[in-house]
Image (tube, rainbow, N blue to C red):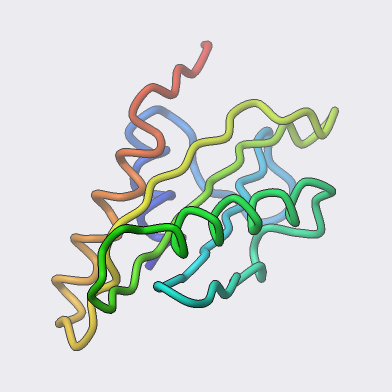
Length: 126
């Protein structure tokens, strides 16, 4: 669903998904946390040297919450990388409550809103 949401957002900006190597590579990281623990899903993010720092910051934010009630939140980090130079063009993130037992439609809407927020100020040069 995250890949579909990113593809839809970038298509509106004139970037089409391609098989193989395109002009831009999209990597994304999902970090799920609560009042006590944090778990990353790095399958589509790669082994970046700043990964541990991102996880540490997320863990600190989740566990220092003043909310005494149990909660679950997810942070979505999206990187846009120049496929030729490997330069990071943009990094953005957003944090949202985790939806449990939501319908596929509600989950897709939630994810699309998160992706759109992360990429809201993305400018694509012609």
